[in-house]
Image 1 (cartoon, helix red, strand yellow):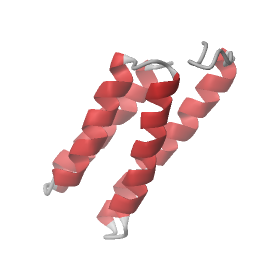
Image 2 (cartoon, helix red, strand yellow):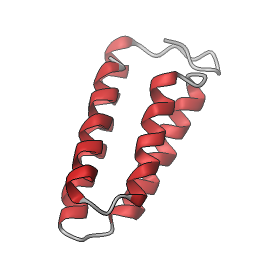
Image 3 (cartoon, helix red, strand yellow):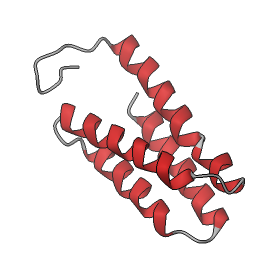
Image 4 (tube, helix red, strand yellow):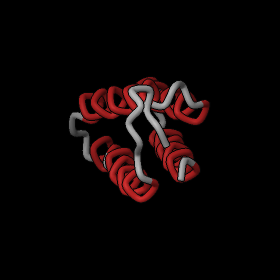
Length: 96
């Protein structure tokens, strides 16, 4: 893969990065469940995914991931929040 700056990203390195990203997204579950500052952490994840989207020229999957992450702010129902987190994890898995 190549970024918009012409930097080549090895497939193995990208897959390792995606594992890290999945872990960051998954961490949103216990943060919200334990009533910790999940929204601040979500801000950081959104900034990272937004940057990733820019690096790889607006990939449709990343746009969908950003939309779902942004939507988490408005979800009151924890089960819907949880389901959306797992949908986000599936999108990241599909990037592999």
